Image (cartoon, rainbow, N blue to C red; front, side, top):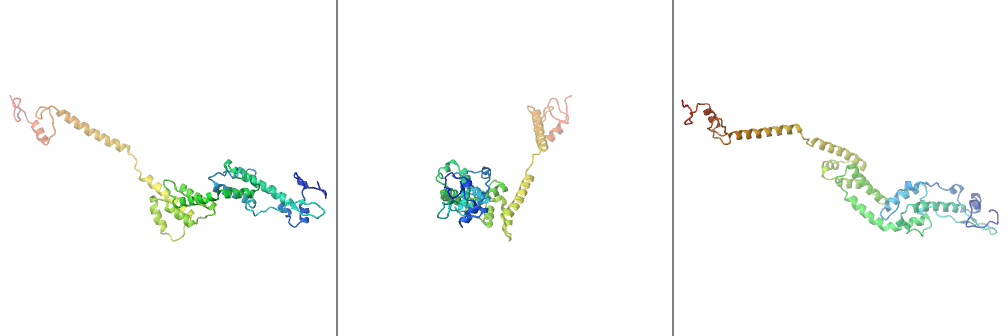
Length: 316
């Protein structure tokens, strides 16, 4: 439809809209032709924002969605800086009003943003935003829903960061944990300074890094978390190398030699005791171990009497 007899229809087609030239000529409130281009919205939004909003991941969801919207130059549709233009253009008294093309473009873009946000909500959250009709209404509803919870989470995260400890973690895992907590705080607009972060990390290293702490505290120049990470990686590598060198290895050859010697002594003693068992030291061929063993061996070399068993003579 076109011409002076055109009427407003709820199912209006794009060709029924006032052209950008007509809109600008009719009213000073119309947008420039360059602002009437629909923005490009990535179709694969689910591949960019991978986390759906639940009751316990609001901070992560907010960071992902707000970053995406800013990157697409669409954040104004949720924070109110991209206001809704007038729906109709004022015309002359003898002609009906025309639809403002700028409003049509804004409406379509707003609904695309609304769809993006709506698809990022889990089933447990969708029921709270069904009455929303614009992207800004949906965004404000979610923010209001989680505002009190966010404050409680902020206190909890700050407490965890203050009391963070390395335990048995590697330096890399320890730093990842600390930076994750600071990122969560940053999502609530509560930034942690480099000095605070370095202090929290140093306090949680534990006694294994006592010598490292001593050397760090004597530094006069400021230390960033990145510099601290590099220094700790070097120190961790040295500690692991020292543990490898000082760990004793089992010597199988020495163990075998010691075992053989012990076994030899035992059998020798047993044999010697066995030979002397049940015999008198004075009997022929008898052996016994005693302090007088040397004199007994000397007497055994002298002739022995067959009758009186005395040394020094024999019975002829």
